[in-house]
Image (cartoon, rainbow, N blue to C red):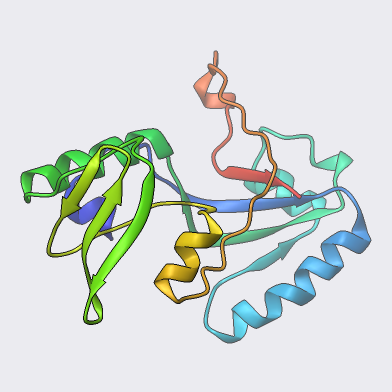
Length: 173
């Protein structure tokens, strides 16, 4: 909704395929996905033949199958972030990038000031996009932030024949 509402151009693609090479791993993922399905998320299980039908760009014969989340979406993250930042700037937001936070200074229950290596930043509201942030800052916020580091790989390659390229975002589980 945000992408459409704000008019952000980021190559949004509907539907994500989670690919599995081993039947046992696929079965475990399907069982874990049951919790999501009970909350109304559409997640389907695809055997290799149906997967090949839905996504002809891959050799599904080498896979045990996939989970298909048609309601999930994937986009170019860099385009999204640049588009969102541009939109927020028009609304008066300021960005302080690559600026290490030393401490967060609350007044009552609200954060009014952040101390950085470049000085103090005052504001009415803050969004700290810190990822896996420093433990000291988490403790200062007094909250548990369930963000954990992961290791993964991503590849972007030019598609010579777009008609033969992938139709969905895919994650090799």
